[in-house]
Length: 476
Image (tube, rainbow, N blue to C red; front, side, top):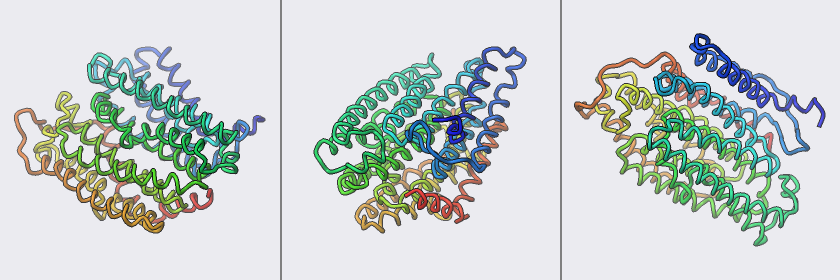
């Protein structure tokens, strides 16, 4: 590997430079200078995000273990946009007396997790994928326990690190079987020898189980609601979108590039995982009284829908999956932006009851939350309708009619529990513990404008889907 190969790591190098700068700024900056830390950090990361949309060199590095392509660059841009929105929404929380002295830690740790997710997406070798997953997972446990003096936050950190270690062990166990059966960790070499031998199938099942923890697929989902509830809201938003998206993208590449020849095996496994994940996620969401636990089970259900595109096993399926994640990004983060605002002005109340009468105290936030849940539920004309349509179409074209029918039935169920949020905001009267009229901070306003614009623009401008399609067909 010569120095020219580092041109392929433009986004990673930019992220490392930003990490070093913010670390030094937070460590050696004066107290007066640190007053501008939040604005500088968000501004620099916005520049880095914009840089990702510029024309970049593609190729291989680290002996072929790392691959940069137009599609992987686009996927990283999706993660960057989501992370930028999370940074904007975290302003009120980071400005509180309890966390203002830990702003630097939040930004630097988050950037480390993002670097690990970059490596997961660009991995062309299972060791690189594993290194990326661990680089992302361990700091995420720190973020989940960021409010360490709050019992639920500390509990969330412990649960996440234990589950993360367990899932990593399962994945490594599976990778050892795959290496024994195929003699390599390189995707291209493994694809040449892959077969439906018992050793390879066992290795694949354990590998899939390890990634299923990250995606919160049933039955590997039990940590999700507790961690989402205990972690700070901005961290919950990051876990529900960025972490899930990175795991989904990594799974796509592994399945399509390595296990394409045994599609008949993993197709059946993913079929059942999708059905059970969508159904249980929806049914348990109905029972929730806490808004963060509510969206935890909603995100579990959404992970099941993501599997529909992956099951298709085609370039169209990959296109639909990436597009679905992009729409999910804007829709889910819009909801968490509203949750963060209400939580901040209700002194930490995350009950669904805290949203009672929100339309009267803050009609704009109620309207944005309505757009968000309608998009998540797949109601036209919002972007969520088109994302579900494309992902159902990709599965149906491969003959998965029963799976699509079950997913459609579950979509009706999801509309019921999403309407519970609408009922609380627009119909129920605000009780004594409800929030009075308030205004959100400028950072969160910007994030909500971005999300609301994305919910409409990504759905109405077909060129976005077509662009993703051209990238997907170019890589397969």
